[in-house]
Image 1 (cartoon, rainbow, N blue to C red):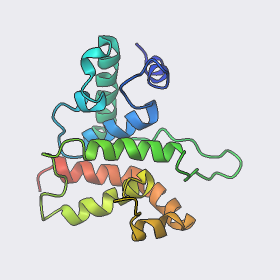
Image 2 (cartoon, rainbow, N blue to C red):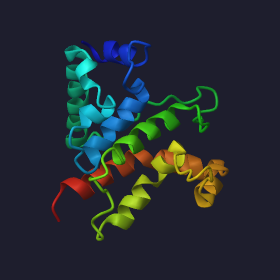
Image 3 (cartoon, rainbow, N blue to C red):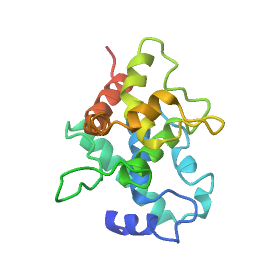
Image 4 (spheres, rainbow, N blue to C red):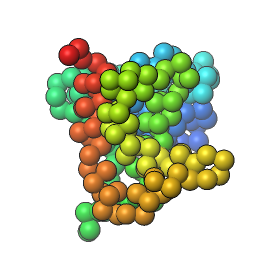
Length: 183
């Protein structure tokens, strides 16, 4: 199965348990750059991976391995997001690809209550700063129906959003180095 075939499947109604292709990319990215997520494939398919065809699961595993290879070869992980051709601007709306990607990333980041990206006090502040763009764009910071005021203020500032969006690819490399290299 090609990556295009996999993406078509992920974006189709046949994908009953998984995320769309953009959110899946975000999810896989988080499993690569951050704390190891045991049973990540199960989390991706909401515990229903047994109901997903083997060729789909294998294609996702291969996609993740390709992304890891890109990161390890210092190419970095490129976000699969489109820009407006005329203006060169990115869509920051709640329906945007950036939002979907960020939701997938944050889903993996918090996918297992036993995996805490902030558990190491020496790097927790760095992790918070490097994952801030994903938290802002995911929009999942609402608690009891109330949006975090600090993040809401950032969401109203297009310049801040553009800076955050532009920082994500570099932040991914920094996260990978924080979690996967020894000092």
